[in-house]
Length: 414
Figure 1 (cartoon, helix red, strand yellow):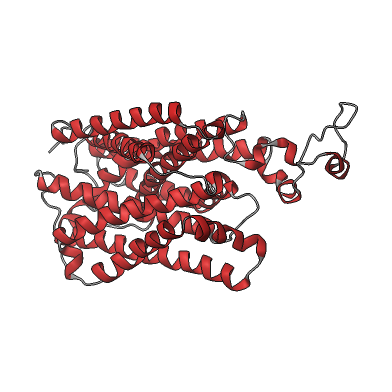
Figure 2 (tube, one colour):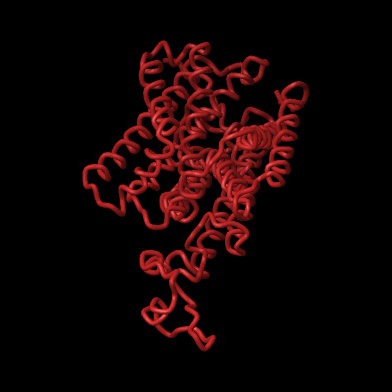
């Protein structure tokens, strides 16, 4: 049975996209911050959040093949549809990074070369040494200078291109082979997917951390955390599982995925619950270790958030930890759709706020304003992500008819 993307949901996604366009245009025209800092910061927040969900889908898809998992075979087209957004999300992030490189905004302080190199001397020449330049340059920043080999120059852009190229190539290959398997059957393509998925996970293990350092952690250039990559990864993973579960439940209510039973729902809800606990553990571990050591260069990250964003920061943690822990811990709760849906929506918004608080305090400091532009951009990008996902879902049969584990997935019952 094929899915046709039409009707109210398509209209809704288009309306949300229109709201996003209005928010983007109106926000840019009305943003009075320096170099439209607020507008660019929100573009990065939304660009990264939805890109991360698509990347989480690609990761989970590869994980299912590498681990030879059977239960998810019936619903694997959902993940294929979600990671179709990777090129679009990557393009948004690339636009933000290029704009920073050309000084259209100041989200990344280290992109200002005067902080660590090309120090102008009185005669108009550039200094030969960092020390000499520092003596003449009032903007010199020693911490940023010491990170310039990693953050500055061609190496940063090479990494970014490699990240995006790797994800796009694997996403295209996985989709191509999946559709090819529908036609040819057998196990040759399945084992090819198995091997390539294992290879992808090797790349992902490195890139998921380093891209979070490059695109998000480097906003707070003086600060670093060895847990940051894992923390961002857990957020992208749980957001992916939430979106997957909600859309599949909606599709099932419309007569699609009719053989998706309560055991499938239970498994997806367990992932939502389990990764929420992983995220909470990493949030607390990062906070507790930095708070306990009380090193000034490290605690400044949390001082900023507790000083200027205390209420949303703590409410966000409470929602993302306490709500799934106390509501979803029971077995019956993971099978109760009327309970799953409101919790999933609440946690989804909570993780968007998490990404928002990864970016905004380091870019807007204590001058941030949350208003219609933020809400409009969030809704607009959600509409775009939904439109891309459901459009891709309508391009092929929902059920991978020749997947070797399809019958095992249909028979899932516990």
